Image (cartoon, rainbow, N blue to C red; front, side):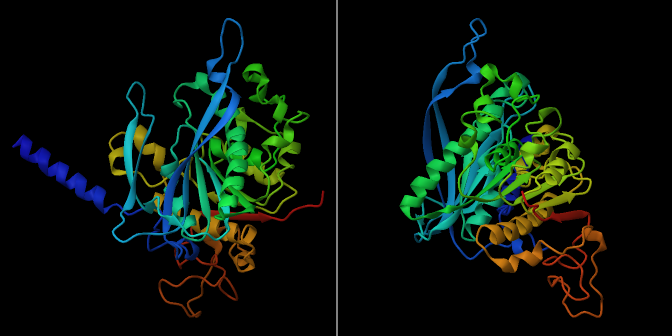
Length: 435
């Protein structure tokens, strides 16, 4: 009997896994701009090598010397593509650290992309994605595939972080995030531009958590050499790239038109910039955060970054009662058995499919406006009532049950959202001030 039940449960688990939708395909309650675009998506993997880099995790405790070695970066690239008859969509597999002393937890996620499909050349904008500490690029497939279907080339960097539970290795990601982004962005702008796949003058940066710290720095935020993090790095490894450093401009990625920080690190005890450093951000900024984020802190994090980036147009989307887990895909079936594994992906309050849909809508509007220059997207971002609960759609105004709000006239429900499906959120916009 036990064997029979085991077989039944195994079959049910397999059936559930097969039924899981690719996260890049939003649910029926998604706002208007979240839906997939018209293009087929391909995926391929690239390898870049940056020579003679400091390896702070190999510090010799006896001599205090930090060795140098070549650093290999693997890049997952999603792009508009043609496919051959009979090709099969990608199923992504990766692993994340589990609760010590357990081994890493493996998971799989279905996708819509086709491995090594022939790219459609078209000088698309380039989007560089930086994942969170100990995360995996494919756990952000909700974003990477969706944007590629809309005419973006999306390059996600595998930063290969140490296990997040070993806090003694925090210096590694602190050093490498901005340097990886600077190196990979320049290499990809050059190689993919030469290939005819991207327009190397139109680049956007998207980062989650530790990746948010990286992309804000790459977008111009000037690192504080005396801050609580940089001053503790071995050999002050980031000091040359901070305020007053000879290589300050190296970590500024060229041709950045927009930057998105999702639950970005860089505040609180990990303060990377002071107010004047944040004021140096040089590209329009969209911040997405939960006001109950206890990992990177909302008040000294996204809230402060929004207020301080005074020289660029900036936006702050807040999930009220939301936490830190707003950046990855919905939880895969094989990560549901342990709370530690589950919490990599899910928020205690917000349904993840809903978070993905709202994020996709807002990010699409933002990138289309500032990177593609599509001014029709401005009304999805500006002129909204700050508190989504305050939006109204009078019964006297025409519109079916699942219609998208026009956001005009008597209708103050956020543009592109469905009636009764814009609650629990805040959205703020501030325009740039003259330098």
